[in-house]
Image (cartoon, rainbow over all chains, first blue to last red; front, side):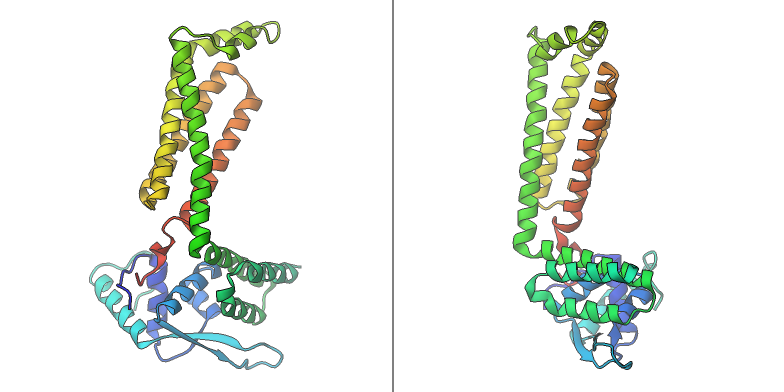
Length: 102
Length: 209
């Protein structure tokens, strides 16, 4: 895995949101609402996390008829370790503005 | 109506997204299909379009091309400013200023404007030199991928440009020329910020590097 360097408020926010329920699969729109990030910020972050092997994804069949399958996400073991490392680094100090408490 | 626009934005996003990322376009489209509200769907789709643009620019070749194109354009602007400053030095040392000469003969009463213009040679020359050097600094920071220094260079350039607009506008009293100058500088500032946001060191947002 590449060297770990948490840099932006948004990326930490996404990692925290995903790490809050590590086993559960999450959808993009739900993550948007939870992190208050716009789709233009969230999806590039998800792409990068996926590229780095920190995020896994799969297609889920829609519960409502006529809707397409949804792409769902959760952290991999490496992703969870990364989120824990960030939490350890940032948890010692006050959380950055706008971050949800964990 | 907003749903039609949302679909259109999503179609554009699919066109813009690099081919290797098409799974993500499919994911965005599927998410859009699950949204209920029209306005929310449009905001979501427009955000996805921005995300696709970012993915496109962040693809190595695109990012490098964007930075290089920007640097070439600003370098040209900077050389123009420095050439103006050199010309100002020549005029200050006793050379003939064709612009002043044409101002004198432009229309009845234009001699007053020409006199004001002549009285501000030094300020205009110094500001042109500063503007040229600030632009060069911006190019240097962009090439070296120094985001913060680049932002500082943009701020310095903007401050000098405002000063320049005030001095030249005061000297000439031309509102149309002043507006054009300010429009060009605003355009450059917006372009600079876009380049900073999407092409210079985009991996700063990457928590894993």
